[in-house]
Image (cartoon, rainbow, N blue to C red; front, side, top):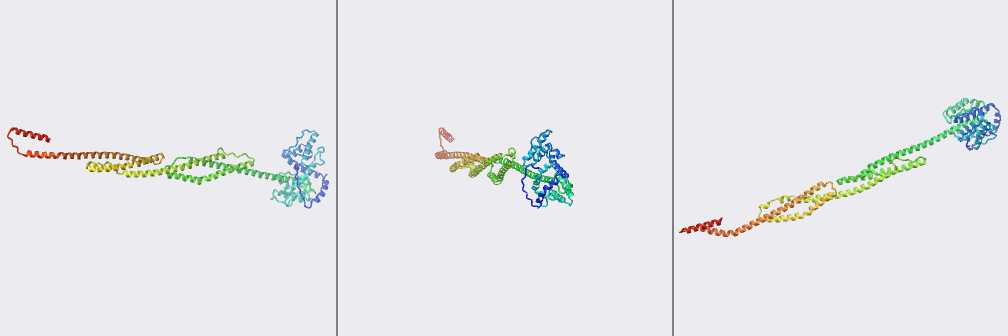
Length: 547
């Protein structure tokens, strides 16, 4: 096959046949130049070779000498082989149109570094010309392909250096073993050749350019025909290697893409989980509802410490790993010339960073609030304990005071006892005045507990109110008892004064009574009515005086 890019390969042959072969080559060419069988084999081989390429363009040739005359299919053949576009051909049917097309083909061949000797458009392009130009490339193709050169198989020119048809046919089956190592090789040259040709056509898509009978029955098989056929194996194997390389590249690309897709899915999953955790945690940190007792607030503080020690550190690592994965993924996509990865809405790195910043702010505020609340509850507990102590002491002091103040022992007491009760009452009033400050302190503490929103403020208020009510009642009872004592004292003092006045006045009266009794008991001697009348008047005076 004619290649457009010449592969420069230096091949050294030390097989012992090269010198002999090179000396006889020109002689063989001259001997077979006019051999009709040789020409027929040449035509068949190169026609099949050309058709193996032209069929890629949907056409073929029947006669290599006639079908290339107008240059159209020759240019098409060169385009298929080279993969390049040739100048636009002339579509006319005149001879100069055909010459122009052939010249374009020959100029293209020359531009690729192929030397054309004694070949021109006016003289026509025969299959011999094609064979001559294919010869060097066939050698290089065969020598360059490693599977065709390994031990036990022919390499380079040694296939044509052996005249024995049996040797040639036996070597054709190992050629198939390069691709099908399990194929059997029998001591049957004709069968081996046909088997090789059939397998090459069926599995490698290499057309059957040679006839096994021609190779076996010809003293020296045509070198160009065989090398043209063998070179098709090189290109089949090279194409397979290129396909394998392309497949490996595709697999590598697919692997990279699958890995990238996996990283994208992993990013989406981690981002969703992290954002969901942030959405669940942030309201908990933003909740500022205070607990009622110190124990409950201490439990909240322990929960927060557990969050800082156990729950948050893994999420910090997840966040860092998420950013690393995102940057790694973007780098891989940029290296692979792929579009940058765009996460789902709300799952960008910036969105996660913003949500995380909100979490940090809520966490900072939550910690400050916890410490403030704990300090507040500590003060509340201290005040509540102080209130309880003062209230208990006051209640113990006030216990029984109401009953004492409600007694009416003064009603049966003497003046001396009343005065003793008054002195005792005055001492109680002094004690009561001393407890005024304590009651005021209890009321002040209760007021502060209300201002600080103490959880059991209702009980505090109730107890404080009870103390205040009792205090007011004690004050009222104290005042009433003082008044009663003072009133009783005055009454008893009046009675004593009356007794003294009575005593003072009773002595003269007693004297007079005694005199009157004596007078009444005396015997009266009267002589006249006037004297009787005088006694009656005196008795009436005494009666009126006594009443």
